[in-house]
Image (cartoon, rainbow, N blue to C red; front, side, top):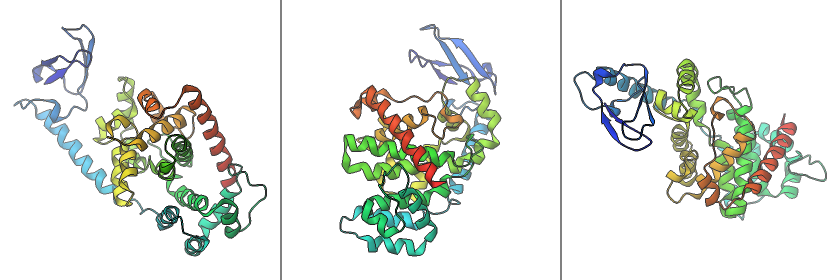
Length: 343
């Protein structure tokens, strides 16, 4: 098996028969003396050289491959993105759209209209008087803001489910999604106002991959606990090692099903590693907003452990530490006010 020291980069060819399958092996690097840690519980075939004694690795790789195919198929079991969201985005994208365009949306879904009115009257929007009709809300808030409310209201059911695998109670994922949406829009308005609408919409669905992976994570909760207990890496690394996918990758597959614009899908795919997205400013926006929501404790689950915001992303966006703190305060207030009125 080819083993590399992550400290100095030196590689060692260790015979498979000397490595105990299914265990964690630690030994000092002969070159730099730092500890090399090898987790043989979830090793893949690609980590080993072809060897007659590598049947165990082949078995593990086959299992991961089968699981990946099963997970990808389950993406198709998710309901399609509510049509009202797609219609709302068209309204938001058209500066010449009017209340009549929005009215058509509400005719097909009165439940959404009720939710939108509740949110329009939330403290977040700070209206001087309560609005009692969609038409009144459109006049007071503007149709673009109203279209945004449609998007939020129509995704609340989808994102409001309990996720046992991630340790999220019912409503927690939606609360976190709201936080990232609000945070993304605030950051985008400072950095590049033209992407503010996309930033908000992407924030709402950035963790949609968890909806698909949750049952698989729950079934393997013991393996996840063992991985995290014996490893300094984060939950994302555990997803990849145990399932073959992380939730950001699955979210990008969901984006294809939902016909999400490419720039949003790419940002969602790389919101945990924005530096991997080439010239994708929105990925940095999502990453920092996600970190702010996590560190603020908004809708966090077991995957919030060891979460760190990439300092390079903060620099790329031109944010200062005091600005990040202020953004966190604004996000917390916005989510609390919106949730209070919505429930």
